[in-house]
Picture: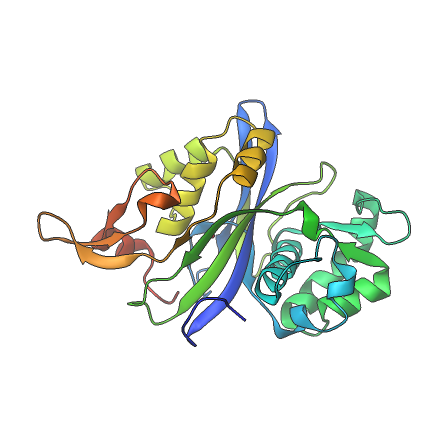
Length: 273
């Protein structure tokens, strides 16, 4: 259940998988399939909706770091890790026997679960039990929380997390929900969006820019741990010139507090952190 009000809100979660590149922090992003009903064709972070099976009774006992989390936060973390596995092939999980992260060899053996998990043919709890795994809920650092404006016909209540990508996991798009993928520096993603060679919707762009304030993965995660997450639910209003804009809280810590409504509508037409 979302902790936000409104029955129309769809709980969702996403992960910014990070690594240190030669020129600074890099984030893994995928290009959404043009037939997907949210952010069609856009460059986004792996993620998606919370599934009812993410909250099955036997899941919590197989998630490290679940202690003390309410059902909303718990389900968000499970969904974020599951969706990252489905969409990118990266699995933040440990062997229950050794406590070690799943390595590349084991990951290859688990590859065939991605599609059944995505289709709901296998629940995350059953997958973990069968394979003797525990999810690394403790590896996720809350980074942002966005709620789709109430003018949109489909509204998401989305938690964004930061996580270090395991070095030996090969991140690659799934070929169905996402049709391309890239490890990219935040400043390059923003530059390409400005040039029109990439489509990045407003919440994604704001969080890419926020990530770009950190020179390394360690700095990004440490900063996020020390920073209170302020919920952003953009409000439709007018600026001093009388033009419609989306306004977000100053307290959220982004570089802008408003965006022209026309610019947002051009990249977030609803077919559709």
